[in-house]
Length: 310
View 1: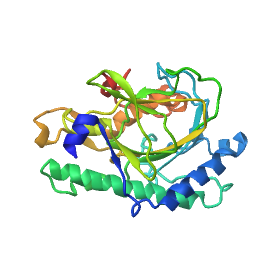
View 2 (view 1 turned 90 degrees about the vertical axis):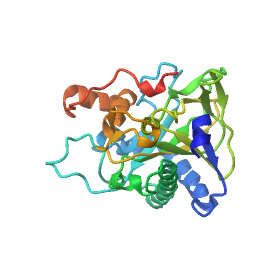
View 3 (view 1 turned 120 degrees about the horizontal axis):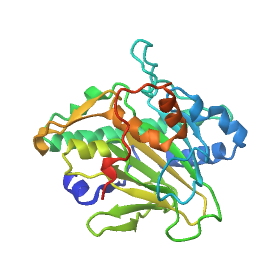
View 4 (view 1 turned 180 degrees about the vertical axis):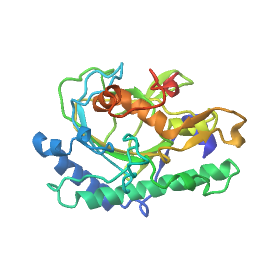
């Protein structure tokens, strides 16, 4: 697994019917179609900027600062690890911990999303166990940091449009994912990955009942750069499509160092500091909260993501 990820930055997982039955994929698609088909006013009842833990609806207008994003033509709905909020004495407001919020207008939405989240979390945990074993650690090495992880499931709806018509048009700009790894289920092609060796972009094929696993920033850090975050973006033909990425992460406050198997380093990184620093770029409501002092941070918000360098 390590060699494959080191060479490509990704791999496909097929024959996963026991973990994610085709019926669950189908239910996820149908639920998403019903939800995103609601009037905007209904979806905005769960606007992510009204939540305390980054959960809810992300409208087209919640546009980040990707330099190569032609125009925003997608909306999303985000959930995370469901847990009790932190006590006031331990919370600074921005740890993204707490309960999910589910619209009641779509019957069964909460159950479907919870089931799909749990299935992806289970797959990601098994992948982490294999990485730990390959790094000559106990299989459960990462479990200590999975008490209320900053792991997120996102439903993304790319809208049918006639705005993006050129081959190089992007509806989501080039970026790496900020967590350990990403598990993506797509309804149709659109994901484009950057190959550092050839310095070129390649379309990622889509296979039925299969998910795509990408290396994220925290896995690059843990492996001392042996594995590298996959730089990717989303192109569009103007057709409607759906994508369902699951971002596997550790607890927000986890401080990580490079695993000894991958060499010696004194460098450290806090999972949540990196995550919030990048969400600051991606979500105007988060930038406003930090800049206004509503979420006072005691760490530096970087101007760019060093893991995105090519």
